[in-house]
Length: 325
Image (cartoon, helix red, strand yellow):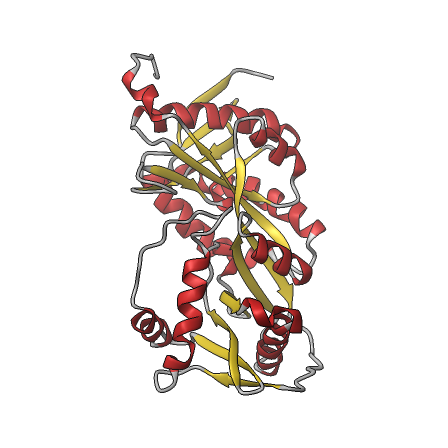
């Protein structure tokens, strides 16, 4: 290997970065064949990489004038806590595939040096879910899983709706799911999730969400009792959720006393039947891997394609006079 040169990630690197990223994506698509083709996302990725090239947090590595890898992320003022963080999306890093473990280690080492010098202590990197090599590399750098993006191909559904009815939630009837929405909100504060979400007015939150174009929400009633709800929207958390033929679930909750009735599955089947009629091809979901109820439910029906990994740096390092450059 010739001498490797480290520079900031710049707009001039985007074309070569797309080539590196395409190989990452194609290898994931070999494992998750239902993923859309990479070309569907190239324009979006180019826009995203352009933004990342301007923020000064990205690193590139070159060998003999050829881009060997890059890593760039978004600054987040409070990421999983009160400290500043950086989030590197799945399209925000890639390396020469056969040498990706070694190069990604170098990229993170150089990028982390820059981030910590700016007192950015929470580092999150999204990776393709079936890249065990890179997953192992980041595990040994102190990263653990936090969030999952998953996909499912929409299929015709035969819905067993005995004893249940479905009702779309609108501004006129949103009050019937307020209690459910409050319970769902509170659930995230429990062990082992421990998400300190803020108190909110459930009805106001629902009405604000429903008012957004293309957002849809449905409840399921068992013997006329509202027992659960599901909602979906056009865009999820991942760039790869943005597709004209995809819709993304952003909430599903069933009261504990009704879960033995498989109402979550029935809600999923119901909206899938609606989306299939409207000629959508895929449905996506994102969830916290630390939310065990969500993890066990969604992995039955969806295939993960990205994991968002997190490492927390001890902020006391900022008080120690280290040479970070």
